[in-house]
Image 1 (tube, one colour):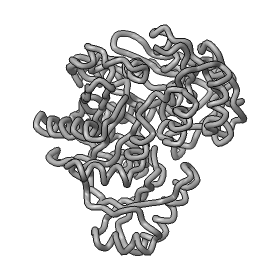
Image 2 (cartoon, rainbow, N blue to C red):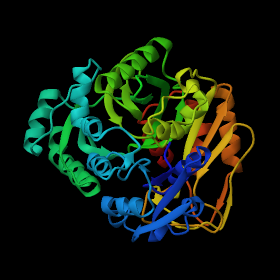
Image 3 (cartoon, helix red, strand yellow):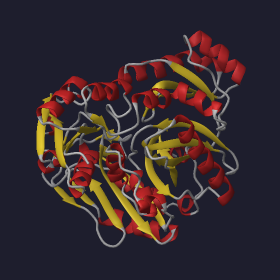
Length: 450
């Protein structure tokens, strides 16, 4: 096992990793920007190193500063969390060249699956269903030609995109050029790569992803699915496990495809394979693979009775998957709400600032993952998520009732949050019936305007 792990991230995921390290008897090192000096992960780590100013480009996205922090503190492994450098193959290579273990898959696999166009080709080669699409496009002119061949509507997707960035649906020819440029420019600014490709747009689809995990001892398994269809502008709002859409037959086919894919590429560590599922719950199509831990991993942990961050660390240290993970079976139902510092009644405008009061809900089946506290100032420099509220019950009906109760108990004063909007969603008959797809939130917001 490692002696000391550096956490190359911030916020709740950094704190989550630090806690996992402590339970494993491993020391932790936090890195932080000047804006995060008061973040909880800085206070709870065994050591903390400032790596730059508030801008992520000058701190959390600087491999040389993170490696320097690891060398100064004698860390023998780095956990990247999600976002930032977590799917950066070059960073994984740098770690390897410095004899620091990257807690995640190899740089080769990150390159293969982290690039969406290459991942799609890999899925096709291994028999995983995909929607009609294109290769990487030279420019908007070539893209329009391909869009006509595929047939509108199409989804323009940046190969290096993520978190909803670099994606634009296009329904008609005359809008293609402007949307293509918008997707490319957005991805270029966020990820340094503006290359795009096309996929046929599946109307009214559901977003369902499978958690996979593998070690270097020949164990390749899936830990069930998460339904992430409740989203706004490709940003997930609420996730649940298991999906209310899938029946046993489709669930089995998707699970088998997921395991076959990670076996074929020799995957190691935790990852997520994302699919679109048609509105009838009959067919599924590969979207992409995230070669890292996901924001919504807690719902899988609660239903499957495992701790994925600990397993990531153990796998990277050369240990096999824990027996209880290899033999995990689903139990009950779990729902997660992402609590963002945003004003849901003002076009979800970010709401940074000081939290005057923070009271998190508790009780049976309630979990809150967060890095904030009363008196903490939410900086304006990063993603607006400040907490994840996860509830678990014996069945979906109980989990929904528990989420209603927990959201009602959650008190945050001094900033605006998305809690009131999530209360509306959880209370809606469509959610109770599991009758929603990735366009539900947009339609609901339009109805509220009217």
